[in-house]
Image (cartoon, rainbow, N blue to C red; front, side):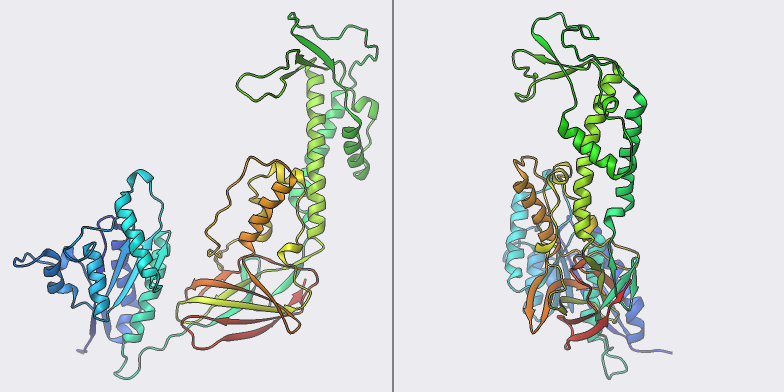
Length: 507
């Protein structure tokens, strides 16, 4: 049976460097028509100069295109990456002219700027500067969007098409299709949505990683004991068991294990009920250290002395094992202290959920907890110097405080655009702590308030598609377990504030 269909023309306006997005735009429009057009007796038809223009004389090229089809379009999508385009008589490029003319006529323009990676050598700085100026101009009205991946672009474009055109479609000549977002806070259980969130007591100090480190140290102790008793003579006048160097520029210094190293290892052994014969265990035989008498500057390095171990292979191995064991135990002890402090806290994993039929953006989330329960970022423990020295990239912080994406729940992506850059010029522990706190600052991006007996944290979610879930920016730590959380969520495309209260289980 014949039926009338409302047809909307969508102009695609992009400079020549935007090619992959051109294909995605056409695919997305086809998807939209299939999902929404048929049921609403409507369809979107794309227009592009490559398929909708024809040879014509009697005017400037862009003006002819405007007359042929551009100005008759109902809306436009424009995408910029590295090229701004060829100037026209009145505008910086043909794309700019199409955007400006359509906006003047009251038409909808979907404007996007790509932030995909590109080789610096492929950038035309003059063109790129024009893009930035154009972007700044439209940024004042906040009418453009950015993306870093093609997948992100496709998701944004489909949602923007839905937000605009579903309101234009008329069903049965009466009402536009009804769409809305439905935002809420939900708990997370092993990467899956849970209607009732639960608090967990952490046990980092007995984690698999910590047990693995401990096993490695006990294996090292066993290896030291297996090397056996080495020949050791306390008489300093007795000739050493290794040959002296022929050159007179070097001296040999006998190596012994100092008391501070023994104390670190002995304490660990006592705690783990490991028995050692201290005299034999710390005996490295006649092992010596060869040193340059002239200060021993190693060519190609800084002015640190150059040492060389001199002795039997088993003496060298034992000394290396003892030295490594000492460092490993110190590092392990700092991890243990750090984790013991964290284990005094409890944590909650939450996500923001949109179960509606509409994409939403500019989402403001507020969470309310009884005063004094929430552990603020300034109350979290700080790792010791050995941890910060050995882990100068600090990525382990993400494993402790940042939720890991799952099939059901996306990662939060709207962190400040200041990625952490490792420093290698640390001079003291205070510098190291500063770097660590900067990483925490990037994850715990919440604003904090205290009102009417509640601790309140708030943050912004840039956008969220319908039927999607996204983690909060970080795991939430608490000094004492809360029983209830309350939330308020407002957004750009919802006329109401979503409110709710969730009881929290204790596991």
